[in-house]
View (cartoon, rainbow, N blue to C red):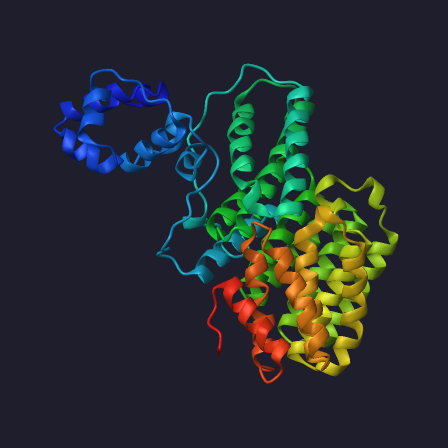
Length: 441
C-alpha cells in the first residue's frame, strides 16, 4: 500500500482496499467520488489532479506526505516534529516545567528540575542519510533558513512554516552522513537554527506543542555545535512563548537560563536581548523597579554590541527593536502600574520603532502599532488611538500570524472601556471581528 501511495497508483490503492473488504460504495463515500468514478479507477484510470489526490488522501486518512503531495504534520512526526495534539492530556504548566528541566540540563549541565521530557518531545524515526556531505551542503541549509526567516518577518509564520518543516526533513538526513568534524559542528548549528525557526513559526501559528518540541531539539543541536549564543537565542524565543501564554514566572526562568548561555558566549547583543525580555516578564508581574533596572542593562549591553558581527538569528535586534522593547515594557507597566507615568516613555519609544521598520518587518509594525494605540487610549487621546488601532488591523489582515490577533486582546479591552466615544466603539467592533472575540455591541 505504501509503495502504491508513493507512486500515486490509486487503482492499486483501491484494489488493495477491495481485497480487504472495503466496498466501492464505501470508497466513494470516503473520497467524495461517485461509484462510477471509483469503478473506472479500479479498471486502471489514472488520477492526476492534485485536488483529487489530496481529497483521496484526506478521505482515506492517509498523510499527504506519503503521496508526495505536500509535507504535512503527520509526515513531520516521522522526521522532525511532533503533531499538535488538539486536546492535550497533560497540563500546560507540567509541560512548561518539563521543558525547563530539559533547558536547565542542557544549559548548565545539571538536572535542576528533573529531566523527564514527557509529552513535549518526540523520538522521530531515522531517515535515510546521504553518504557524505561537505560545507556546501551545510551552506544550503543556512541559505534556506535565511530566506525562510525573511518570509516569516514579512508575512508571518503561517506563510512559511510548512516549508521550514519540509526543509528540516532534508536537513535531518544529513546527521547520519559522513563528514569532517568541522562540517558536522557547523551542521549542528545550521540545523539548530532551522529548528529554532520552526519553533518560532509554529508559535506564530498557535502550535505551541510543536514549538516546544522544535525548541527542545534546537537546544540539543546548538549545544553539540558549541554555540552558546544560539542556545541563548533559543531560550529567549521559548520564553516569549510563555510570556504570550501569560506565564511570566516560567518565562523569567527560561530567560534567566538564556542569560547564563548569553554570558558564557561573550555576546553583548545576546545578553542585551535576554535582559530586555526579562524586563518584559517583570513588567507583566507588575515589578516596575526590576523591569526598569533590566531595561537599563539592556541599553548598556546594546551600546557595547557590534551588530555587524552578530549571527543571523540575533541580527534582527537593532535599535528599532530596542526601542520596541522599551515601548512594550512601558506599555505593560502603563496597564499594570501607572498609566500616566509610563505612557510618557512608551509613546515616543514605539513611535521611533514604527518609523524605523521597513516593509520587510510587517509583523513587528503591527505589534507596535497595537501597543501605541493602547497607550494613546490610556493617555486620553482616544481618536488618535483608535486611528492607530485601525492601522494595526489593516496591516495584520495581510499577515498569516495568530499572534497579531492575540496581541490585540488588550486593545479590545481598552477600546471597550471607552465605548461612549464613537471611534473607540468602532475600533472595539473591528478588533472583535478580527480576533473572533465577543464585543459588547
